[in-house]
Length: 228
Image (cartoon, rainbow, N blue to C red; front, side, top):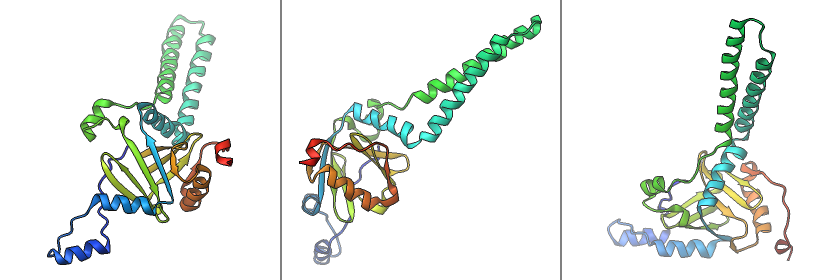
């Protein structure tokens, strides 16, 4: 999860105030937030949770890095099957039998280790969250504002804005959108948490804005609410 920073965008009104105050600009965060909200085409308010964050980590490993995930899964299964096969074949000589058991047992253990490593994924760590953010980010509410040219994210940590071309990628899953602000950090947005606009319309909007950076990882199934 990327740490949210306060936006440093300066408007014409800010520049005029700066001229009157000897060049010093003091941003009014409340005014900026209101301006962002007024200009937003879509607004989403997603309550974070430990389950939601863990789902992000799992999605990243198994869907975003899916080639690494499936390659390691395949290699681990092959090692286990090879070890079992050679172990069953055995050897007629005592020395060969002992070597066969040791070597192939190690092969099976290596395969099991890689399999367990591949199936596990990072979990939410409250202690780490307290050290980095001085807060429990699993209790945050993320407010997403999508305008014509940029996305703005606001929560307890502050506010950040990204032009659509600056966003690394947006992945669509069955119930969520995973928005990657950088190659290794991102946020989760629930499909059922729109307070302005409908998810079906947002899907078409964000797909058009992100172009090749929009990645689908699900089969879209339009619920009744979308059709109303």
